[in-house]
Length: 322
Length: 280
Image 1 (tube, each protein chain N blue to C red):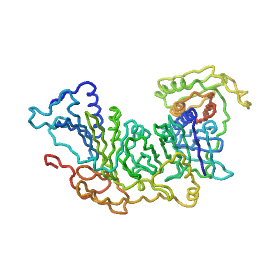
Image 2 (cartoon, rainbow over the protein chains, first blue to last red; image 1 turned 120 degrees about the horizontal axis):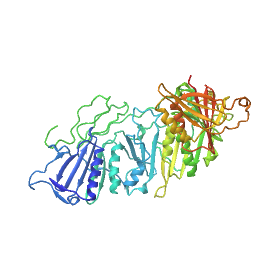
Image 3 (cartoon, rainbow over the protein chains, first blue to last red; image 1 turned 90 degrees about the vertical axis):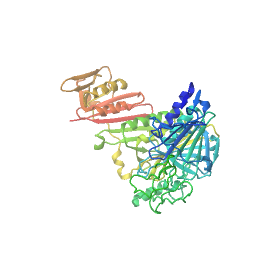
Image 4 (cartoon, rainbow over the protein chains, first blue to last red; image 1 turned 30 degrees about the horizontal axis):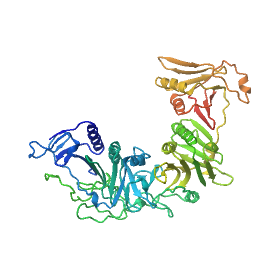
């Protein structure tokens, strides 16, 4: 392989590598017919990212020498390795959100840099809402919750049902956002039901990038935020909402009884999809497990959970190992 | 019990944000007391705080365009909340270009102070950032823990030097000793002294001026050169000085010899009192 990058594209290549480094530790390089691919996956196999740079991106692009030979595939340490390819198809995702990178950067700015996961959804009234996700072992009476809601007009495209939502890793998303912002490109978010991976894409004539992130498989926002009767599960902040101020009932309750945390709705098992992915079964009635569905070799459970039965492999190593 | 308030003026918002930032540097948790005219941030002198206490008072009319509250009862028209001030600061940080900021007491999964920030957007309707800050409602029977401190029967009252200068002196002293002696007299002189086995360092301030208090009976007999002193924890002094974001209109301290140092900072619409007990 021999490629030559010059001028401003050197910086672009560097930024792409930098944003991949926010996901995984190893960079897989593979020169292909249609360009040079840079890919990475994170340690728990729940996030995958790739950039493809078209031959025109380079001053000189030669995939293999001599041209007929097998093009090398390398990890950054220049060792021979397997090909890394996740199975995903944006076209299969019913929901799509598209916005300039700058809008999305501003949308996630209010969240603490320490926040791990964020929930993105479409609220009644068709506002796009980002909300901080509280991990299960966090005390809800101590942690601050933040929500950002934007008008759908700020999005170039919004094809999603009201109530659709997914929860994914914010830190990994920020990696792609910073690249998209520096390249001044819009970002597409293709997503499906909770539990199925979300696909984030950017493209222009010289490159395209795909970040595939696992999403939490909780069915809806109800199980995340124990809500009192009468309040919607989606906490939408209407512009002039002072309606739910009533704390008197809380005061009465506080004085007469010990307050217990509201019960959290159990996670119902999703139907199995035979073709691509299978999910470990969930015992109804148990509290929801935090599970990021792995794109690769089985699912990843929270450390304290006992391992489930082994799951079908979603993406085999191309040379048959594993 | 209800509380709702709104800020629309950017200057008021910045000012309130600075107060919140100062409080968050002085206390990890504190009490927010709401009354029809005023807000208070209170830290009472529990052992857990190392004996330090704080009383910060704001006139609500100087900050809020709308301010409505209903206390726990008609004859106790106040609300006392336990709050982590850093959360309030973090919420206000997202409001830098806000069109409006609304703060209200809500009951989500627990009692919360909800801060709703309306931000400009290119579309027809604004962006809204909402922060739910969990708070604890303090029952009426505990309100006596949070009474306004009385001005102690001090030996000397003196205006402070420029806080920035005082802070940089104390910052350097902190590397050498854990304690500092603060002493002052009625001739407008103040010294900050540290002493170790190897070295003594004193910084002298002159011509600071002594405020006149209404009842000066005790101190009139005092020899004006006589220093009143207190040995205090240097980190607590530094924490107090480092928390100040704006130069106050008036800054003074009252020293009760070997007992306590009482700092008073006055801005146009905010007053802050901070007590640091003397070490034995």
